[in-house]
Image (cartoon, rainbow, N blue to C red):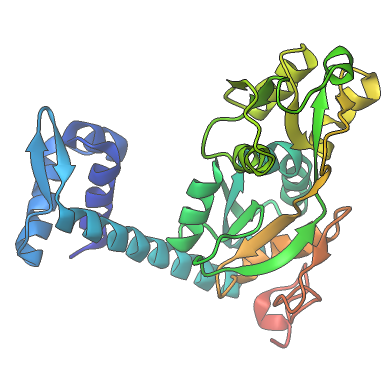
Length: 310
């Protein structure tokens, strides 16, 4: 039951066809089929069944795919931990961030971090909250930047940053704002901001018209163009507010306090903690109470892990 076979099976589970899995792995279709057949023989239960031109996981295959993903994530996490322990400044770091955090928080942070620690092997995944928390739970991410971690995800909150959500609109839309009637411009389902907006409206038992747009930039631009109001982070619209293209709407119960969280798994790697220390030097970020390494741990930036007295 080799790592290569597990990777092939997970690729097939995600792609839904042998051809797509082979393309994603840069191998032949026969290699994919052989790997899945070998796993099936070892387990003694069918993992996939044919369906049209593709394949569908059997119930056993669905269960096994979840475990296979976690095993592969743990292997990558182990490599990251070992390389980071040897030299944090040259270790790997797998970041995952929700779209809003990636847009607002990461560009400047990553540029400064890369300039300071150019030999860190950095990777970034950007996606909806469900995806990034799933990546952390499956050991596919070392650090997540998002809102509060959901229940059931093994997580260590290392740092927090304030984040106020406000309702904004073009000045003429804001002037005639009515909670139950003014259209709302929203992200797609699965977005954390969308879930918060839906919950906010449901709590007030109103159902205004909704216009769904596919990105934070599109939502802000749509609100500025007068398509409706939008629930956004105040930090995301600072320029538009300063220019007068948007104004904060006096909506009931606003602003909402939804702080950003930097969250690792139960055992953050040394390179993860290196990034968190960099994060804590940025405006607004504070260490979480009891977070490991938040106040300096044994590793000091600029030294090798073996010379720190850890």
